[in-house]
Structure formats: C-alpha cells, structure tokens
Image 1 (tube, one colour):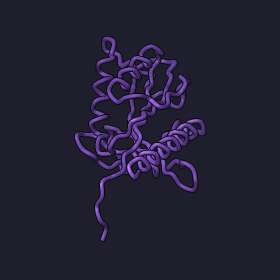
Image 2 (spheres, rainbow, N blue to C red):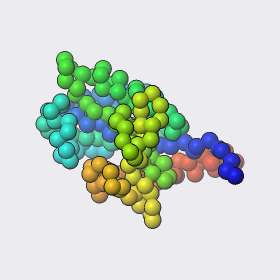
Image 3 (tube, rainbow, N blue to C red):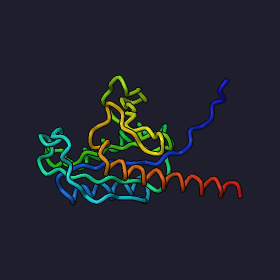
Length: 181
C-alpha cells in the first residue's frame, strides 16, 4: 500500500511571448512582483516555431523564459495560470493581446505546462485548467514526448530547462540540509 505524502515543491517556470520588448519586460516585472525574485531570465530570442500567435499579436514575435527562486506547490498551478491569463488581459492594447504568458513548473522528473485546452495527454486539474506533460527527465536529460511543442524540444530550450533543473535540485538540497541541521 502506498502512503500518501505531500508533493515536493517545484520550480515555477514561465514563457513570455510578444512582439514588443517593453511589454515582455513589463510582464516579467509584474510576474516578479507576484511570484518573487527570478533566478533566471533568458535573453529575448526570436520565436519562429509557429505562426499561431501572429494573427493575434503580429509578426516579429520574441520570447523570454523566466525561472523563479521561490518554489511553489504543484497544486497551485491552476491559480497561477488563471492569474497569468488575467495579466495578459491587463496588458491588452485596445483589442490586441500583446503578450502570451505560459506558466508551468520544473520538477525533478518532468516539465509541466498549464493550459486551458484539454487533450488526451492533458489531465484536468481544476477551474478550467489542464496539465500538459511536456518533457520527461530520463537517462540524465529532458526528453520530448510525441506531443511536445517543437520549441520545447529544441536543443537550446532543453539546455535552459536542464540548467533550471540543476539549480532547482541544488536549492532543494540546501533546504533539506538546513532543515536537518
């Protein structure tokens, strides 16, 4: 028989996509206001993996990844996604969405993203939010799955998430050590 235990804390990880560097920076500042200090912010890079957002936000999309120093409970992911959806609405100019914010978390075993779109590989969490198992950690590296978005399967993204995982595991180890001293 298994004995239920609380899930370990996880590392909040967010993707911010937009066309305007100032709006992306403003979104990141508001995310840090809400979730605390960032321990990693990627350079702003071209986002050319899909034209899905172009119709709504325009051409010349750019993306930044953000990892937060404080850890979260995995159960908080639906509330975080609802909050980031609200932040997207607050940053709208007229009728145009100017930023797409996708929160998720890095755990020792996987990367989970939050989404409002259900699918066969996305279990329902609550409040209209689903968990998207995006990457799994096996044989010393994150591995994409058949449904993983191409941008998350890209070597440069995998390297970023791998680095975030290393930092996260080091932070957990330090917390455990402090709690045992």
